Amino acid sequence: MLWYPGFKKIAITLVVILLLAGCSSMDVKPHYQGLGQQPTEATYFDVIIPTHDGLELTATVFQPALTEGETAPVIIHAHGFGAFRADGPVSVYGQLILSGEAAVEAWRHGYWVVSYDSRGFGSSDGQVHLMDPEHEVRDVSSVINWIDDFLPRLHRNADAKPYIGMLGESYGGGATILGSMMDARIDAIVPITTWYDLPSAFAPNGLVKSHWAFLLFSFGNINSFFDFDMMFEDAYLDMFGGYLNETVRQDMAIRSPSFYCDQGKTVQADALFIQGFSDALFDVSQGYDNWQCARRSQHDTRLLAILDGHKAIWPVQSWTGMPLYNTQPSITCDGQSFALQDAIVRWFDEKLKQHADVASDIPRLCAATTDDQGYVLEDLPQGVEDFWLPSSEVNLVQSGMFEVIMSPLDYLASAFRFDREPDPIEEQSMRGGFLRQAFVPLTVVGQADHLIGVPKINLHMTTTDSDRDGVLLIGIGVRQMDSFQVKVVSEQFLPLTGDGVYRQTLPPISHQLQAGDTVGLVLQGFSGQYFWNPEGWFAKASVQGEVWLPKPGALR
Image (cartoon, rainbow, N blue to C red; front, side, top):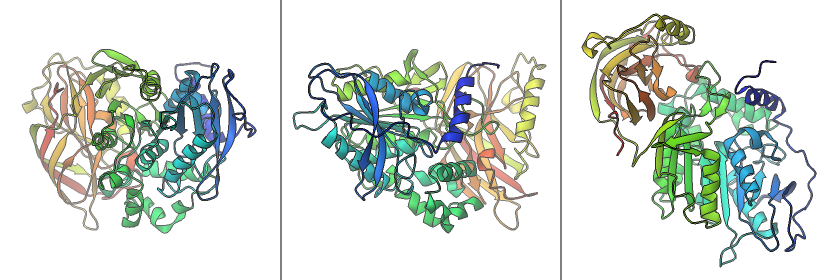
């Protein structure tokens, strides 16, 4: 069998998809009882944790190796949506997912770790309530209560409170942030690729990311044994028509840190946020807003803006090593590389074990541009360079529909293009817009540089769709001097949902530029990320106005 890089992860992932509903592998035994003060060996075992409303959560406890009289802090691990806990060091989470890898590594470094099945998933009781404050979020406090009551030899402060950390990705990241907002007993958190405002993340400008709606609906129901009843309610089924209705918007709002941040609440723990630029579900703006909210507290808060996260199945997005979800193992910040797993453990070492300054080299904010390049920032640069977008006409729906076929042809054609000098911007014009995506050039880069930050737009759009407003997707694109291909930076689009004026920000972007690159605006009516939302067949959209780009090289 051909064994190429990434094959192991892909093979394991495919097997896991078939087995997601089967989760427990051990008998539930109270191994933690009677440890006394004698030395202990590292082991792991399953336990049952009661909830406030009479249900039972199944958890795996990782007991660290302890010397005589030694104590240890505890880390709570929460899994992603449709998945289940790390039920051993050799498991899906222990081998494939960053949060689980870091949790297992922390156990090996002398931490108690409690990885639990969220209600409705795995072996835990109950219905899935989509991180409801009265259910899944209160479950975090139930887990803390159980830890405080039953785990022995916990590292405690002068007030006898145990030192507690928490980490999780996506759904588990939501539990981590909301849990910290509601329960001050958590001392340090690491939320990974999660949301700040669920309505705007799931449906920017009200248009549902139907690719992810379909995946979450499918996995949520199959892997909870159809204990996800709320997805069968009319309001949620209505989302498959393409738009977010007010009922679901309000449901999602109260499940969002933004709702509580607007009320003056924030996390009550030191927080290391990890978020991905090309995350198709929760882009960097979600992590950035969580970070900004957390900075209102007196706690230490940092943000590592990596490249990946939730990745749609190829060819909707580029292949990066694993379908659905993938994070690169490290980030480089001003020439210094950090293994993410190691950085997370060192974060907990500093905050829970009080090992002074072992995480001091982790930047307050770092943004990756490639797998081995990134920059330390004071803040995410905002769009400041103003470019005029002339009136540009694009076919709706059809434009962009054939990029999956045409992009490889562009790649082949580029092999025979040997331009030595870039075309001046005044000699370039819009390309595509009929069956292909449209690319409207804005500027040509004179030297190698980086493009990091938040673009802004002030655009007026009109459509020829007489029945309903059409949808136009826009993003920042880059075309290299010797290439016909256009790369949508960070694979992020913002939908413009009908006639009107749009004064707003685009998703944050990060890209390493080469001399001669042309930066422009990509316009198209179709994307696999919004595949259930084709509106405006045989209609056109015309758009013009201003685009502000972050200034290349703007670091501080």
